Length: 283
Ligand SMILES: NC(=O)C1=CN([C@@H]2O[C@H](COP(=O)(O)OP(=O)(O)OC[C@H]3O[C@@H](n4cnc5c(N)ncnc54)[C@H](OP(=O)(O)O)[C@@H]3O)[C@@H](O)[C@H]2O)C=CC1
Ligand SMILES: Nc1nc(=O)c2c([nH]1)NC[C@@H]1CN(c3ccc(C(=O)N[C@@H](CCC(=O)O)C(=O)O)cc3)C=[N+]21
Figure (cartoon, rainbow, N blue to C red):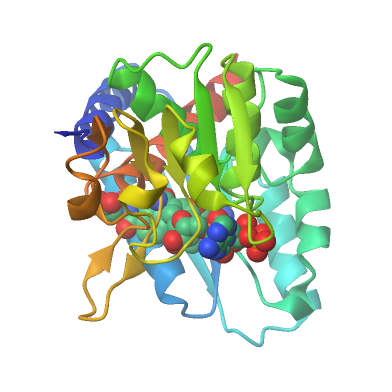
């Protein structure tokens, strides 16, 4: 089984974006600016923020981290959010999600400027995704999955794809991206009668169910390409994916590892979409 390195894809994208940022600097141009908004102290959010900050520094763009206490009053949160949203110097906004219930995520999704919505939470971005309009942004993780497959030279057109998971940030948008790439897609969730069979039917299998090492050889077809989106911790507290990579070794043709897989590409896609937002604004 071949290991598809997400790290390599991430490094490739990073180098390209670094060149772009350097030429902006040489030309004395304004630099792209990202604002990351975090509420509370969720480990998931913190690790994404850390990865994103590291990536932005590697590329050389401006970033600012705004943090709120878990119990921040709604009015206070949106007063600051609206200021960032209207700030001319801000090109992209990432709000780490989910945010606490009392902050009303719908208000956030409905007011974020779609031009700055580089992780695609607004109805405008999601609508464009739905119609296959490539001018919009896609959620960075979903976009990263397609990017990895393309980089690894895996043909998507005409392929049978199964995605395990239907969340708004991974499974659903990814299904739409695969359809736009001319694949035939099955989406599984907790009511799917036979997930193993759906998995066995796939030439490309995406694991995004958030269950540590659930996906073993019983879910995987001979010679399938497996993309592991999961970020979990195993019984020893070690970072692991949704795929039991040792168990599928003899069955699958290729798989992405965790760490060093999709997670690394996600932050690169965030940077890539930041640059796109910047370019659209400067054009
Ligand atoms: N690499 C990266 O950059 C990122 C990684 N992640 C990771 O990806 C994983 C998924 O994240 P996310 O989509 O946010 O997770 P969610 O928990 O929001 O969604 C999980 C989905 O999987 C489905 N599901 C759960 N168990 C099963 C099962 N046994 N059989 C079939 N379907 C199942 C759920 O079904 P139902 O809808 O019926 O509940 C749900 O649709 C997590 O490990 C997360 O940490 C997330 C974001 C970015
Ligand atoms: N609006 C929003 N979008 C998200 O995509 C989102 C979110 N909120 N909230 C939190 C979760 C979790 N998540 C992670 C992504 C990468 C790493 C990660 O560890 N990345 C490492 C690489 C890990 C690896 O090598 O596989 C890095 O970038 O260096 C962790 C967590 C995104 N999420």
